[in-house]
Image (tube, rainbow, N blue to C red; front, side, top):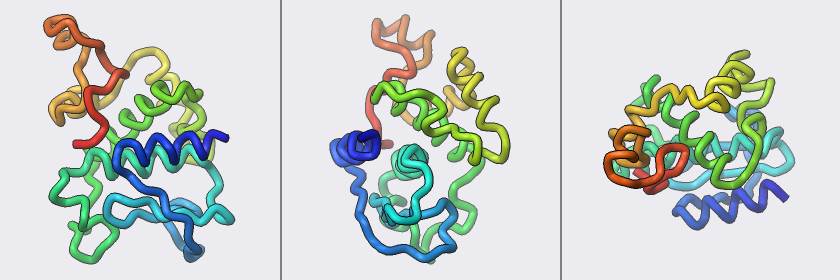
Length: 161
C-alpha cells in the first residue's frame, strides 16, 4: 500500500517510477536512477522507503543536471555531501506529507548505522541542512515562514528544485 502511495506522489511531482529488471549490484537493492526516473526492480527492492530517498536526489538536483543522472556525463562526485543532507531532509518532508513514520525511510539497514540518530533529530525538529533546502527555494525555515506568514518546514513550497 505504501509503495503505491509513494509512486503516485512521485508521479504527481514529476518523478516516474519504472518497473524493470535490474542487476544485483545497484547501490540500493532494486533501485537505480536515470534522469528524472527511478528504475525499480520490485523483486530485489528491500525497503519501499528507499524510493523516497532516491526521489530526493532527483528533486534537489538542479533541473538542467537531472537528465544526466545515471549517465557517464554526470559529475562523478554527484551527489555532494550537501546534496545527501538535503536529500535526507527532503525525504523527511515527504514522509510527513504522506503521513508515514520516520523509520519508513530511516530504517536500521541504511544511513551507515545513523538511522536512529537521524530519526531522533528530525522527529525532534533538529533539521540538519534546512538552510540549504531553504536556499534551494523548496521550503521556508521557521524565521522566514513567520516573517512571510507561510507554513514552515516540513511543509514544502515546491518539491522539485
